[in-house]
Length: 275
Length: 212
Image (cartoon, each protein chain N blue to C red):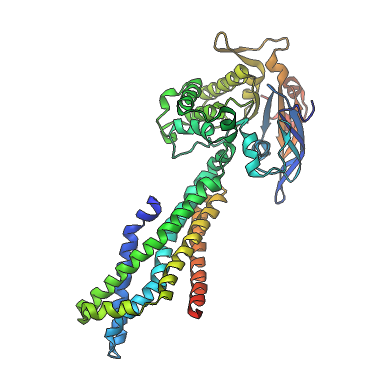
């Protein structure tokens, strides 16, 4: 896969905060519809991987290609258009406290210049319809007029997912979407991520501490006919083939491979994430 | 603008009035030794309009609003709302810093004018009730002593202080790291640094106007 055809490509990317390494010589690439599950201890560089992919943090060295465009040296104002092709769910949710849920989900539709150019100023009615559709997707349409503080942690994550996918971006980044949630809510969140990935063939990077989340991403798929999550076929189902696992340690990508390769790894650090 | 301007109005009015009352009281006592109580109006007027009014109001607004701005933006920073804003196509400088800068620059000079006026009323109340100085004896020299230079200085200072308060608050807010503890640190730094800069800048503006 060339840098031009890849959705995202990291080419020997390094980032330091003082003497502390956040990313050290990280290289990988992923294509459309592919999934990467990033595992690692706290402070291993997982979140920085996502932030540099979005151009929110500039790398000290190396190149990052997002949809074939080198974003490493782009100015903030030049990054806005390319960022409109990426949805993101932040670790802390990142919902705007001062806005209602409806306004939060409408925010990317109303503020991303690229969408305005393509769709010639979406009418307000259209925005509202799409906001409702996104909230219906996460089964929270009834929260439209509430503010984030009125929702539970799990509901806020689901709103975050609605906001990330409302523009139907071809790449979605999820930063610890299940952190701090009970197992039932965590599985609901993963089911929504699977639904988004498989119904729109979205490229997905998911940072997580839970191996189980990666297992679900690799072995389950959303069936649009039944509207249910089901096990992917054993003989090379799409999600198995397209899902790869990364393990990070001290800013380095210490493992990259399939789930079976991960399970077979003898590296003591890598093995800690396989349960 | 509502939060920064209208929200600060009651406390600014109170501080303005009491600074005039206190100054009138202390000055009159000192001036009486020379039989010059009649000079209380010009002294209160010139001190308040040139220096005390702008500085007191700016320190108050720094305490109230630089901290407010820093904590608000700091909370947004640590909860990744600022990153979300950038990721969703908005420049946080344009969306968060510019409106606060404009609101502070517009309201601080207005608040200063109000505080100056109430300070003069406070000075007059003391002069009248405690030292039996009549209305025209206080207000005519208080008005006549003022030159164009004094009025301009009294407006240039709050405008400059407004820029300091807004930018320092935004700077520390946007640079916040380290969770809620970091927000506390950013808030404290914003108040301390903006207060220090207010004193430094008032000295230099004063120096420029004295030489004009």
